[in-house]
Length: 104
Image (cartoon, rainbow, N blue to C red):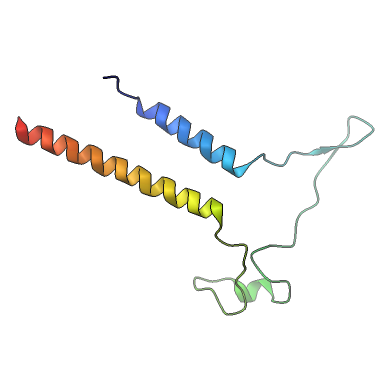
């Protein structure tokens, strides 16, 4: 039985997470050629409503009227699933090691 090196598993997980996040924004090159324009900053957030002040919605506890339907979704579910699977693998390997040591 061949053993998989932990670094390979880490590289595979990072690759999957990078693929889920998508491409990173790069500077915009103008049509004339060499000039590089910096992208305009995004001041609108999907997570905070526009009618409330941003400082009113910041804190440890989410305040009424500050939530959004954009939170959660398939990305958060995928990360949670990967964490649970990873913890399951860790606990399974620990239990296999403990059983093996008890037999010896």
